[in-house]
Image (cartoon, rainbow, N blue to C red):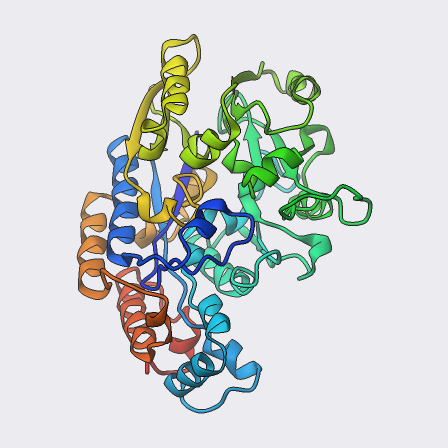
Length: 443
């Protein structure tokens, strides 16, 4: 038997609205607003609790430490970590804002995952995303790799691809898997926004994922080319604000749930998917919405989680924004009433994340595991209702309920963040996984 483990990113204490993500409409639109890190983390934990109550395996990914003082030291700032933080803020607030981002909470960008059923060597493979398209995200890979290895100690966790725009890799946000069931060999679908060496097509916003990166990940994961497909995301979707494919498309099992403008040629896409799926023994089910693209992006309808339930049906985990957008709600209702596996829809309040351009699917990394592989997961990271309650109490002890852009320059915030994470690693039996712990200090 196989199950799908959802690893959710725990929102960090420095969650803020600095508007750092070019091409992310929500992030840009909320730039400068006051954030509530405590509320953001509690909203994310409540989403985890929803899945636990549904009988689904759920794990947590800890936040990254912020700011990255070793990065600041590399570029010439000196002194204690607090002094480095303070002097860097005085010299260049925008630089420090990038290094204070809580963006690792969106674990859909942490890595691309191929389960053992799909790989030639029968191992679970993960490739850490390099995220080179955005400066604030390009610094995440080393810490992400360390945490992935802690959570999945028996998996093959690959380091990030070369850190340049030829191999721009955004992780599972541009990757889909379709299959008869989680334990069956699957069709792995990589979606890219550009070809690094051949593109002449210009877009308003950058195509972050390259074809070259997608093919490199497939090679590292030892995938069968006959069971692998590369699809190009439409320029129209990218320019409308679908900076990752998971803003306009999500798959689970035999179902593809997507917007009509997710790909340039829908007929060609469907034909290609059917041709690759046939030898794998399943018929794809296409649930395509013909609705305004802007409604899809503002509501994050397709950034929902599409999950297999223990009874064999599927559920959608959606943001409340989708429920409040008439065209999005109408399409969900249509799916629920139709002849397809989707039987439930759960609308959750994730507004703190949504205002930065991250919905339910952004907050989680999907890892398909056999029962034996699940037993090898670092068990303190596996959630139940009691553990979630402990994390909620931890958040309430350590997180601020108000954070402005100017607060990012406060050295006390760094100290608060480190104290919280030091306690968290003890709660999760992780040992020293952060640079500040390895270097022996919090202040």
